[in-house]
Every structure is written in C-alpha cells, then in structure tokens.
Length: 463
Image 1 (cartoon, one colour):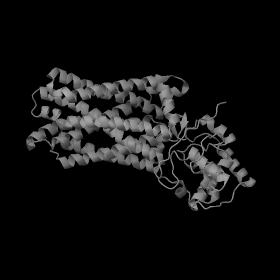
Image 2 (cartoon, one colour; image 1 turned 180 degrees about the horizontal axis):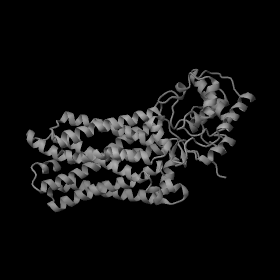
Image 3 (cartoon, helix red, strand yellow; image 1 turned 90 degrees about the vertical axis):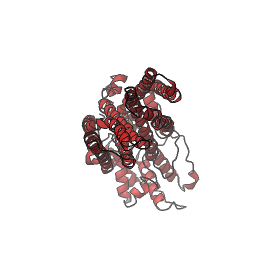
Image 4 (cartoon, helix red, strand yellow; image 1 turned 60 degrees about the vertical axis):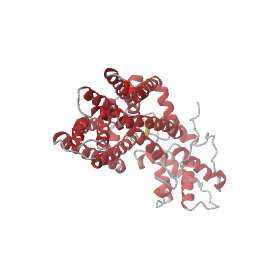
C-alpha cells in the first residue's frame, strides 16, 4: 500500500494559514465579482448611450472603464496569488480538484482569456469603433466574465456538496451539485450590486451638475435590484448544504454564526438603502454615502467567504479529504503506524528541541494542526490550551472530533497524542533547555483507550 503523501510546507509566522489564504481570497473575489458586474454595467450604459441618454457615453469611456480594467487585472494577479498560497497549504486538495475537473478548469481559463482580450481591446480601441462593434465587444467581455464565474463556481461548490459524485456518478454530477445554482445566482446578484455601487461612486466624480449625476445614478441603481432576491438565494443555499454544516453556521460555531450575522446584516443595510432609497424613492446618493455602502459590501463579501470556507469543515472536499489533507480511510491507518512515521521532511529548527519526543510533537503539530492553528499567533494552540490540565489536553486531542465537531479525527496513535501534549506544554513554558520525557505505559494505555472509544469517523456525515 502506498504511503500517505507528505508535502513540503511553508510557515507564515503568527498568521494562520487560513487567514493568509482568506485575505488574498477575499480581495480576489471582491475584485473579480466587481469586474463581472462592471462589465455588465458597461454594456448596459453603452446601450443607453446609443439610445441617446445624456452623459452615458462619457460614463462608459471615462473613469469607470479604467476601474473595470484595473479590477480584472488585479483580480487576475490575486488569482495567481491564490494558487501560490493554496498549493503551499493544501497541495493535495488542489491536486484533487485539478485531477477531477482539469478540462472544466481549462474551459474556465479559455473564457477568462476571452474576457481579458475583449477588455483590453475595448480599452484600447473603444473610442474609435462604431456603435455596433462597441456593443458587441462589451457584450463579449460581459458574457465571458460571467462564463468564467459559471465554471469556477461549480468547482468551488463541489467542495461542499459533491453529492452523487461520491457514489461514482461522474464529473458532471460533481459539477452540477446541490449548491451550484444558489451559489451562482447569489454571486451574480452580488456582482451586479458591486457594479452599481462603484458606478455611484464614479458618477459623483464626474463634471456634471446634480441633476445630471442623479439621472445616471438612477440608471445605475437599477442594477442593484437583484439584491432583493438575495435572502431567498441565501435561504436556498442554507437548505441544500449538509445538515451539520447548517447547524454550525446557525449557532453550533459562534465564530461562523457571527460571520453569517455580519454578512446578512451588511447585505440587509445595503439592500434596504438601494431598493427603498434609490430605486423606489429615487433619492440622490453622494460620493461619501456610496463609498460607505461599498465598504459595507466588502465586509459582507469577507464574511460570506469565511462562511463558505467554514461550512466545509472538517473537510476541504466533503467526505473525501480532511482539512489536514488526509482522507478518512487513511486516518485508521495512521492510528496504527503513527502520524509522522513516514514524514520525510526534517524540522527547520530541529536542534532547538531538547528531546526526541518534542521533535515528534513538533512534526505532529506540523502535519495535523498548523493548517488551521499557529503556536503563538492567530488561533494559537498554546493559548487555547494553556489553562487545561495535562489530562484534559490528552482527552480533548484524542477525542478531537467530539471536542470540536468541525475538526477531523486525530490521525495518529497514543504516542503522537502524548508527543503533541508535551510539545504544547514545552512551548507554553517558554521552551526551556531541558524537558522530561513522558512515556509512562499507563498514560499511553489511557490515551489508546480514548482513541478506541471515539473511533476514526467524523461527527458529520459525508454529504
């Protein structure tokens, strides 16, 4: 039997790896969704300009066009940054996604290439083109950007709701999964709203009188109308995700519940102002208020992305791969042979550990913990466990999936548990130059009994 794969890892200091990926991902998603909504809005205003709506052409050929260009360029760069960071933290997850969906991912890249080409072409040659060509070029850009969203959405949604794909139903069953359509429609509504909000900011910078700006703002605000459907789409998404994920988001995990509340609260404030104030009451919105709404939208996007990522726990691919990059079938095997017995990579600072047990504990931490925890920084294990007794720490680690339902089972044996316990205690004590070994047979037997009691199955089911 082949050994469980181990990958070289990078350290991000006090920053939790999930925060690094999350920070890059939030910026990427925000910019990419604005690029989609901005492209749609450019096409809409181009149609208005060709129908004789005053100042619509100036809007299309002005600062808003540059913002859309900057958005998809920076969005592309942050997309590359996402690849760079995720392959250092979740190489096995990325490998599985590419293996399963490589042709669909290639299709997404083709649409993205069309988007880039059409966007640059309009930026460079737009003012010299006739109306029909301008309209077609913008339609191509807007359509290609949305198709890029279409393909990437299916792959990301598969991570949470693979559904019949788990039973061998094939690639398309995984792609058109239960959360595909609510996610796609929700992101489309978000993209349109972001385009409208940025447009309101840009219109306030144009050299127009108040009435001229108000007329354009009324047109742009119509693009945010899909926000009215977002509560229904969010409810649809919550309905189709696994029951345990839904429970964690709705109170089972307070951090996730808080992110849900932030996303829902910010979206409600934006939606109420846009739908009631701008669309129904036709109020004027100045640049400061439009910018504030845009900042709220960024906060809602950030919280929403944390919710999407957190809902998958304890998996990176539901039912297939844990957040530790270990499969459920491999956990039982590692319970027998040890978590790091076959780990080929030395510790960068191995000489600082005074005993072989602490070296082993550091490797166990690297293999099973540091995807979601640091030692002394964000979500620090040393601080989370500082007030526990040794017995509590041993019990909680051994019964990890019962301690925290969104964590995977401990993929190691009793000696690994004790090595991790001693490593955390040594770090909490300030890393002294000497540390007694802890390998009493009674202690290891008790840990082994706890591991046997809890088994290797997660709390949540695979679907």
